[in-house]
Length: 161
Image (cartoon, rainbow, N blue to C red; front, side, top):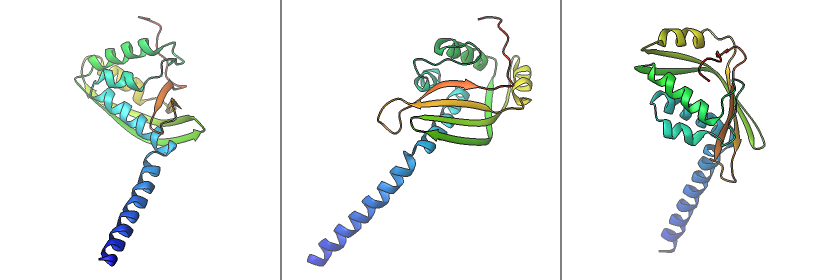
């Protein structure tokens, strides 16, 4: 009986240890920034606007003059112009410094729809990657919010703002 208890205890301890290592990898800052960026793009593909809103920091602001509300309006508009949208990620890099994280990647759009060809041509021909700036919003390792998106090559006309 004693040896069964000891073996069960050691097996439980080993499982807890492996689970702890797995959670530390999953909740690591670099992994969280990468996962948040990828999941945000998946939500855009699926047109899940309330989920996209949940990724954005209250003080979101980008180089094109969009705040949180303007970005959501713009993303919804672009989403309506595609019947189906696929975003392919390449050349991704993740950097984390304290509570700040940066994820950069080249994004390739594909899909059909009104004006989709124009949007795809503009985005797919960009020479610089998109850079997503994230900040951890609380003590929780999974609580990251998007502060800004940047791309030095992308010019968005002021029309409609």
